[in-house]
Length: 113
Length: 113
Image (tube, rainbow over all chains, first blue to last red; front, side):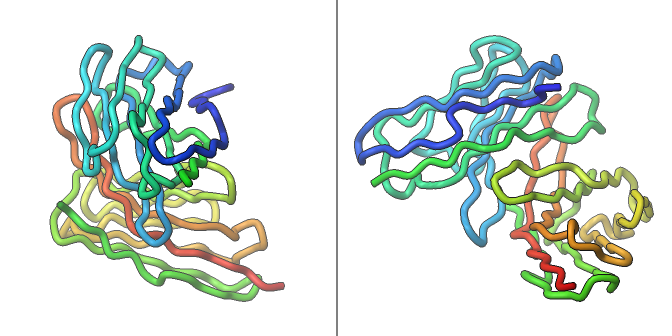
């Protein structure tokens, strides 16, 4: 019962370094999502992928890129990390039918010095 | 973008007390979701509400989808120590095959014995 798996769980980067956060789901879901969670601000959508081969910007996409590698995997890339990107990042996935909720991974805690 | 106001921000209650929290929005949603997040983990779905006016229970939890589609509340009856955590509401808008969640800022619940 893996569900949504994120790697790594923790990472520390220096400003300017690049990093790819990995997400995989084993529930055969079509839609996948990347959020960031900051204190007092809830979760904010960075990018999402409605289906394999498509990606769209969310609320806070600047400084990030995504790749929907296949149906299972959706990665988030920081090309040049900035301290403002210090956050906890969550990946989520959802079944196709409109009434199904999103299921979340356990998060990646990213600190940029 | 859309914003959700969630209140209260935090609560200290005694074991056995009932808890109530709510979310209000400036615009309507198709669905309301309530999640709980424990430290170091991702949000876990508690209750999903799909129709205006809907009242749904899950054990000691009861949630309602407001008639105006702009608000929702969550009640927890007879709280126990394992209820500790952060509770998030999320309003959902469907955009084709994907869903976009807007999260509240969370209610931190602490239970004293």
